Length: 169
Image (cartoon, rainbow, N blue to C red; front, side, top):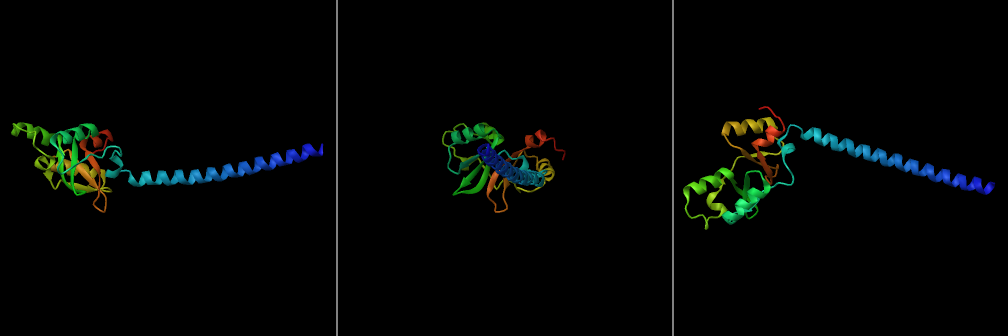
């Protein structure tokens, strides 16, 4: 009987330790969850909250016209940035592509540098989304290049992203 009591005590102690471990884990997860919620609230209303992480279109300065079209089609944002030596130097939109077809009979030799808009309009990641939308409306554009404080490229914001989020300008 004392053997059962000892085994029972060991089992109870083990369960008690497991319960304490689970409580600590729960507190840790709760703390991390609160941090994530806080970050979401901090970014709410900011242009960065609308970016789609998996869609960061970019081509090089010397990319072929065909590669530009593939990148725009694959990322489904209607645009791609152009980089030269790792630095953002332009933007190509689906509208630019249409204009190239209208103006050029031979497009086989064209590269990104030939069709890009130099120095596209850029916004910082923490600009309020409503201000970003107003900028797009004022400039009559459908795309904004979003950059970090250090001027590194983060992604492209499309006017439809605002509509999808039901933001009013």
